[in-house]
Image 1 (cartoon, rainbow over the protein chains, first blue to last red):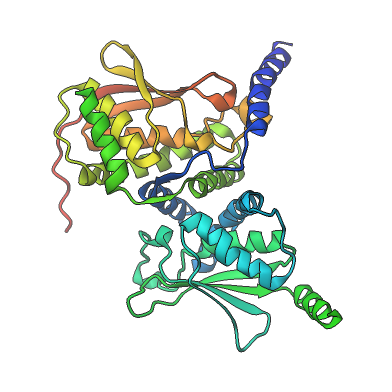
Image 2 (tube, rainbow over the protein chains, first blue to last red; image 1 turned 90 degrees about the vertical axis):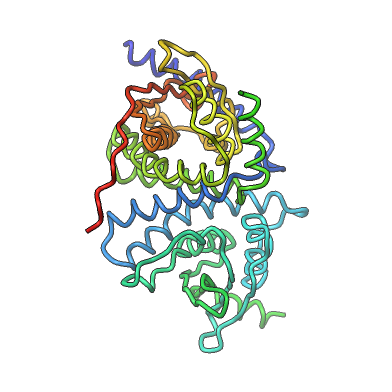
Length: 205
Length: 187
């Protein structure tokens, strides 16, 4: 009986918080910045924690991807709402533009450095970031040199693509270049239905 | 003395610290907590895990903080508390908790009115019932940082707005000073 009472008591206190939370305006970010170090420390611990629970690079990247997906779902809604004209993209190219400009600018204060389509496969697109600052402090040992911490970013992008009705398999690859040791390419491989739908919509024009 | 710390903290935030979008940080932390809740069955284990993660962070964070500011040795525990609140929290989370509720001269509280981690968060009934302290990582960070300063402390959550309390309160008790140990040589 007292347990039920306790539950009721909790409910009234926390429902106050719920209403407060839901009434807050999200139009402008309530809080602008935290320190990059705080994020870097947190991210490093996330990787360390995940490393202890997986076997191998693929699994680790999959875990980071999963974490990124949860972030991406929320990021997508939030940033879409804050646009001047609230509009959800549903075609491939506008979705990619949305990710490249709006999302990247909101998250990292800069646009993604390039957007391209793969020449070999027509369902693959690439978003490049020359210097992802959130990955700056992650360094992998030699035996894991193919590990790309950008898998977290890939997860964010994957969730956004799915939110725009263009589901894709998204992976991240480290392609160090001259003067850009952290250059990361996010590769999106769109699902078959998406490409077929694109063809149909283009043909209909 | 207190005013000086506030200035150092503000200075550090404005000039010595690279910044990143706060919402990315908040969502990432939330994602981590969800992951922990999935990996562990009960919230006590999650609390412990968060504390452990925070401890690992705190240990490195102390060095980072001193590298970016020019701080002298703290004269006493009151100064230490001020440094944690006005400089540590300010530099990393851009929020300044109030130090208060001193008791027996080695125990104090950090009242965090504005915890960024809580921004988009609402706890489900199961987590509430089980006793989850959502921002428990902060306790670990403070504990780790103090240990780097040779103080063994116990840090725990007392109240949390996410659980319906009116403010968030973290209690810190400095239990003893640790001897300076010469680190084991790397053979």
